[in-house]
Structure formats: C-alpha cells, structure tokens
Length: 54
Image (cartoon, rainbow, N blue to C red; front, side, top):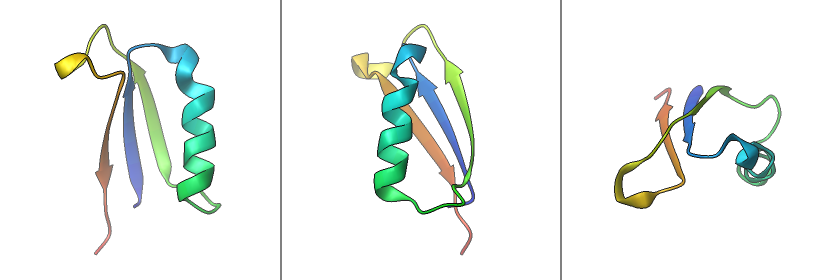
C-alpha cells in the first residue's frame, strides 16, 4: 500500500485510525489523507480506499 484515503463521519475517531494503522502497517506508514464527511453509504463510520504497488 502506497497511499490510503480515509473518510470518517466523525473526525474525533482519528486516534482510533492511528491505532489500527499501527496494527496492520509498519513504519514508515503509507501516505494518507483523512477527510471528514457528513455520511457514508449503509451508515458506515469509516471508508478507505487504497493505492497499491504491484
């Protein structure tokens, strides 16, 4: 993974995102952008899309 785009309905959840990142990735972490949104489909709280290097 080279980049993650993270969409959050509540930006106060961002510290939890950092904890999850530490569980699944090693430093240096991939580049990422976090965006606060009003709503996500199916009442999701978080959505991510990733750019991968093959």
